[in-house]
Image (cartoon, rainbow, N blue to C red):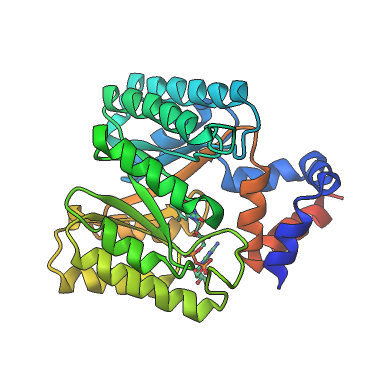
Length: 308
Ligand code: FDA
């Protein structure tokens, strides 16, 4: 499988150096990443909000290996929230965080990640925004959902993410489909073993629909994160079947992917949120985007050839 091979190869430090230093890379990165600084993320938010789109901003970075780095990431989020607030963009924005970037993998990591995320949630609340906790590979799912439960005691509007490729996710959807619970449903972006995850695309899609039915019939606030036209259509139908008002769920897509479709859904009155990553640590994110779609890889390869 191309995707698994690519994700494996991407872990090599040599490949990482090659990709990050290739002159064409910045051209490809800028398609998927808003820039390196908080001001770039603010500028992207201003541009997108002017066309009616909301954003969830992710400061890129994952798998923090020391406390100082986790603290730096917290500071980056606090600065970003400040800048968004100052720019008058709070109504359009929220932030997404990765617990592994906030220290989850360190000794006593759950406590550190919880405290760090609480700091970000507190600043987000002051600035009139919310936080969604991204989901990473399956070894972190229980820990992440446990931290989310803790966070929701003080910050009940904190968003969760569930991945349809995991066998467990239907049950997690049932647990999280309660009033006020914001749940982003995505297919899942990591290379997972067959013991925990569906591998076949059709099975993943069917699981997505089963999960979505639970969320749309429930009392929470589903966030449908997919670019898949069939799933978008099914989402619209389920919203109608469940008599959901337009402001009781939202669609989400990634920055740079299907921008016309983002505009189309917004023009139909749907809430459409774009996930906007920024920062210097874009390598892992870029590789996942390349791995999930051969056309993205071809785009990268074409850029490499045409610039050399
Ligand atoms: P998939 O990649 O299977 O694509 C399905 C179809 O969509 C394609 O066949 C095509 O028709 C269309 N399509 C896709 N890309 C296109 C393109 N570039 N141009 C035109 N058509 C295209 N994952 C995770 O594990 N944890 C997380 O926290 C998150 N968070 C997250 C937030 C948001 C807002 C999004 C949109 C996604 C995530 N993800 C994620 C990533 C997610 O799990 C998944 O890897 C990608 O969204 C790709 O899956 P799709 O549902 O888009 O389907």
